[in-house]
Amino acid sequence: MTPYQIQGPARQCAATGRELRPGERIYSVLLEEAGQFVRKDYAADAWPGPPANSAAYWCGRIPASGAARRPTINEEWLIDCFTHLSEATEPAQRNFRYVVALLLMRRKRLKFDDVKLVDGEEYLLLRDARTGARYEVLDPRLNEAEANAVQEEVFRVLGWA
Image (tube, rainbow, N blue to C red; front, side):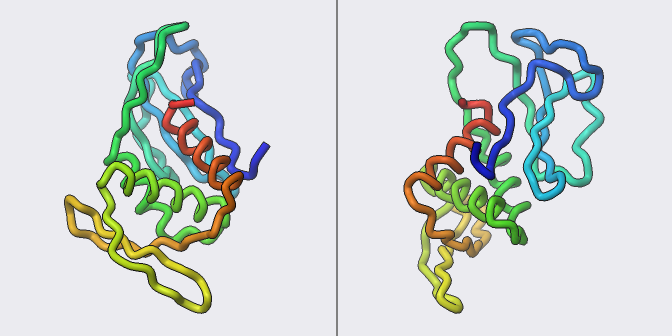
């Protein structure tokens, strides 16, 4: 277990407790609870809307049993999650934001502009290719194992793993 442990997609509605069926439309939300990320999935007819403490939410479908899942990337969800975590102070949240920034850079949504050094800490200076918004992202200097662990958690939250 890593400190970034987030459960993957559930097959049970968080509001009603009923089983979510393959192909059914769902809403998923990423919440901050006691300094940890928690994912909850809701049947479309039981979706109460995003809670005030949500980091992000998105709509999807429960995959068919045994069907090969094709990952889809919702850049707007990633940008929402990324911007929501801009004031994060917890190391796990900062690491999560950094990996999301790298994913958005890989997708060419965020562009690298420069690096800024502040009190011995490195910050990536990034720009949103669509909106022009500018961001500073702390480089937590993750080693390869730590980066892989955070990436796995991001992928699990997205339902890719």
